[in-house]
Image 1: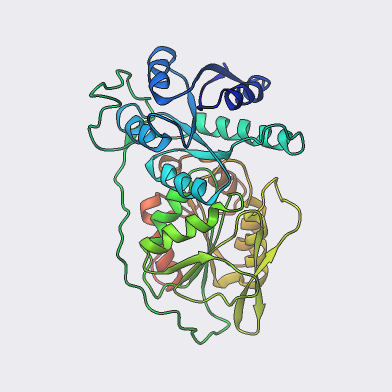
Image 2 (image 1 turned 180 degrees about the horizontal axis):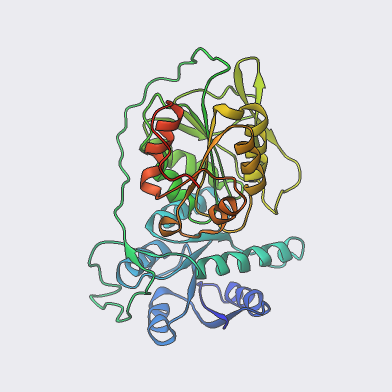
Length: 377
């Protein structure tokens, strides 16, 4: 059975291109297109699509307002279609917080170069969204003028509590004495990962060991992602820069479109950015980061595989475990998409499987050398 998609975009040309991209894929089909959220509301009622692609900025009701109300009243998998701009990145990060499964860059019309890769990415993300666990947001807002969506939520919908907070006071950026026994936390994620990463990082104390992160994300979006996390967390969160020391109390995110590796300089960990070819079709790639951690950190690392589609990171996470690292995978029930954790578990790369809400606590136990293994594979 094909995945049924509703395309919502105020541009008739974009709707046409998205329809062509989706319909030429054998397992996907567009069941309708809408030029604004009011038309989309009626189509959701009448067509009951499996996945919605939603433009970020539209007239009459913007994409964020519509998404917020949709996720309260009729939770369903939504893939945001975003422009590659600073404004587009900020709005997209907010959309992911509101419950969108993922986002794709709006296809560049009239440019053949890169369109095939963009089409493949759009199709992949719609497939992932169709399998995603969708969460209901609290509240009783109506979709428009007091008119609710009279459609039952999908069976996969479940309650969610928003754990975000602000106003965090952090310690200053002070370099610390390093030793060869310095611990390091390495995190890999893809679909659904932005919120999962937030859930882990906001629970870490300001003196936490350094954290290095690869989240599949294009260039330009990780800046907004890091800034949002930095405002929520006790640790400092930033995009990694080439050659900088990796310090405790900091989290370093691989910039979109560039691989992040960890190197050693004496007793210090050093961030290295690598503009080489994609690995597993991803750049940044979790495999690239985890391989460098296996080689240069070894038993002083704790690896975490969070929600995501595919198997990027599986091979190198096994290398990490073979090098003595303690590895955790997010469990299926709390994942948006269980692909990457499932592959890592199947490869024997993981020591423990935990619900998302327990991962930060267990990571801290492992880096502090306390706590027995309770979910050993």
